[in-house]
Amino acid sequence: MRIEVAGAQAVPDSRGKSTVEVTLSAGALKATASVPSGKSTGAHEAKELRDVDGGVSAALAHVTGEIARALRARDFSSLHELDAFLIELDGTPDKSRLGANAILAVSIAAARLFAQEEGVPLWRHLANAYGTTPRAPHLFVNVMNGGAHADFRLPFQEHILVVGEATATESIATAERAFGALGEMLRAELGIEDLPMGDEGGYSPTFRELARPFELLAELVDAHANTAIAIDAAANELRAGEGYHLDRDYMPTELLARYVELVETFPIHSIEDPFAETDPESFAALTEAIGARVLVVGDDLTVTNPARIQSAISAHSINAVLIKPNQIGTVSEAAEAVRKTHAAGWATICSHRSGETDDTFIADFAYGMGAHGIKAGGFGQRQRREKYERLREIEQELGA
Ligand code: 2PG
Ligand code: MG
Image (cartoon, rainbow, N blue to C red; front, side):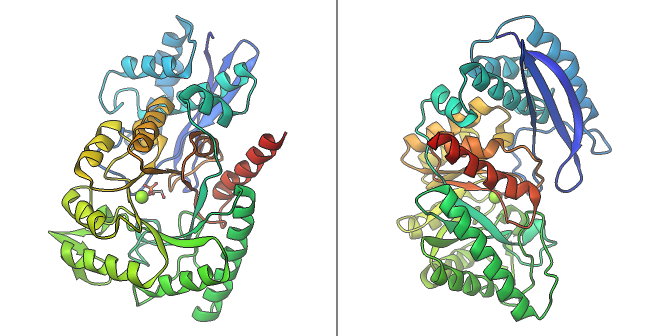
């Protein structure tokens, strides 16, 4: 396939920050993609190229300049081949020269072109291309936002309702009901009509007690079958000296004991980034303590990087991996991260970023990769609902 860059522009993400949108064409085929952007980021993520004022004009110039010229010079027979070419063209280990935002937008748009060429939906093309078995992911719905996504009104960044019905469509229906019910519970408890919301479309209340959100979630779990609790502590953001600051200061061993207590008290399915990326020993100690019952998920620790995932596998520091394509910068490398994780017998959860666009790629990716879960935020924001809507569409395509 001969791929042309048909256009590149800046579009606002859900926080109003500029991000990259690219349109590619190949003969009569045309496809557009835009990329998300994180706030609680890992030090080892691939690098977005940002102008000094936070804009993306340099990244866009790379797409319409150097990348467009390089693509024009040859044919590509697969996304894998194209991604390898982009990695080599960039030439840095973290995609900082051309920008991971520029490269990933091209990679995702190209994935859509290859799917169109094959005449199948995107999720099906991804499964065919990378040899995975599609399946409905559990929904990890961030119902109460805290941490860096909500001015630390709650110390933990994400209080998540996990929903695992037989189909994604049924899971969405259950999750929507539970989200509405939680809104009513919070309005009654806080005595306010307009609940504050966080970056990811979840409610963002303030509680004095660290355990209070868990009590509310446990009520939701009682009232809704096939649900459980998850959190993303995003503990990079909680690091304070040798320890962590939540409702009070904790040394790593104290925080570990607190997690164990929470797991013993509440129906907790998974804990993401319980410790900072600089504290892998604490991850391993927690996995040793609760890993038989609970998923201990690496995000900032592993940053969708196959080499860092391999280190985590060798060190037994976690037992599940969050997958974010923009942490590594191409679709093929994200698929390789999934393959490596699944080969270790571990679960993957494919994830949006806190700054999202209307692009629903992550829904196709999660479904196509056969991921255990998808993390796509709360129902209070359009960019999050669109991911769930795409999952519904996928199941219609599946039936068709
Ligand atoms: C996370 C993400 C997405 P951000 O920490 O898992 O929920 O947040 O995109 O800000 O890194
Ligand atoms: Mg995270």
